[in-house]
Length: 352
Image 1 (tube, rainbow, N blue to C red):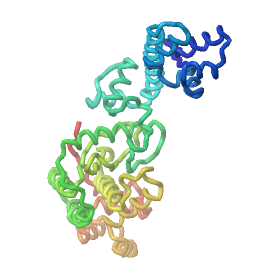
Image 2: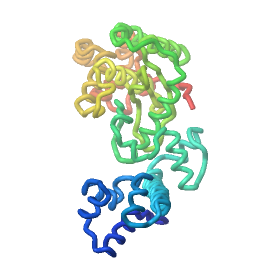
Image 3: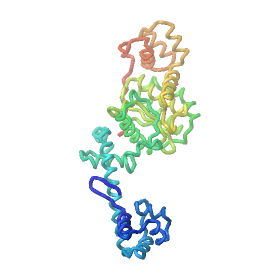
Image 4: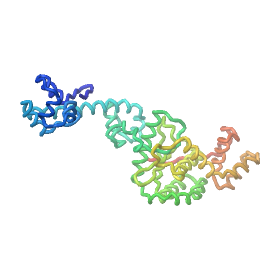
C-alpha cells in the first residue's frame, strides 16, 4: 500500500487475501491451484508484482471473480500509486525548493517568476533536467570542482543552480577536443594577459581555453553560494565558470588559475568531487604559477614593500601589480587595507 496526503493505493492483493480468508485457503494451496510459485503469489498479494491479464484469467478460474474485475483493480491501483508517489515527491521537492535562491534566479531570467510552490518545483526540475530535485544528490549529476569561501547546505544548492546555468550556456560554446597538454603549454600566455584590460583579455582567454576543450563562462554571483569559480565536465568539454563576485584583479586571476589548477591536476570529473587536499593543491598551484616561489621569496627578503617596489617587481614578473598586492596581503606581509589602489577593478560582461 502506498499513501500520500490525497491518495491511498491498495493493491489487488488485498482483495485477493480477503477471498482466501473467506475460503479458509492457505497461500500454499492457492499457489498450487494457480499453478504459480508461492513466492510469486506472496509478491502478488503484497503488490510487489503487477497483476497481468493472464493472471486475471487464472483468478477468474480459481476464485470465480471475473478477470475484468481484477484488471480494473490493478489499473486503479497503479494509477493511484503513481499519483501518491508523485504527490509525495512534490511535497519533498517543495521543501527542497525553499532552499534555492529562486527569486534571484528568476531575476536573472534563469527560471520563470512565480510564488506558487508547485510551480517552482516544476520550473526547477526542468531547469536542472531531472524528474525529481532529490536526484541532485547523485554524484553522477553534480561532480564539481570549485573554489568557495564557505560550505553550507544552502550554499551547495546555490552552487548547483549556478553550475547548471554555466553548463547550459557552455552548450552553445564551440570548443576543440579536450587537450590538457595544450592547456599547460598555454598557461604562460594566459599569465601575460594579467596586464591587459578585461575587454582585451576576455575574448583572448575564451579562445585559448576553447582551443583546449574548455568553455569559459562568466556568471553573476548567487547570494549565499560563497562561490568564486567552478569547473566540471559538460558533455565532451570542460566547463569553467567564474563569478563576477570580487572584481579586484588579484581575486579574478587567482580564481581563474585555481580552476585551471583543478583541470591540470586532474581534479575535474572525480566521482566524489574535490577534497580539501585538492583545494589546497589548487590554491598552491595557482599562487605559484602567478608568482614563482623563489621569485616571491627573493622579493620578501628585500623587505621593501613600498608601492614603488611592488610596481617594479610586478613589471619584472610581467603581471598586474594588484596580483602582487593580493599575495602580500594573503601572506601577512602587509595589512589588507594597504596598497589596494594598485588593485584594478574589473568590469566583466556576464552571461544571463
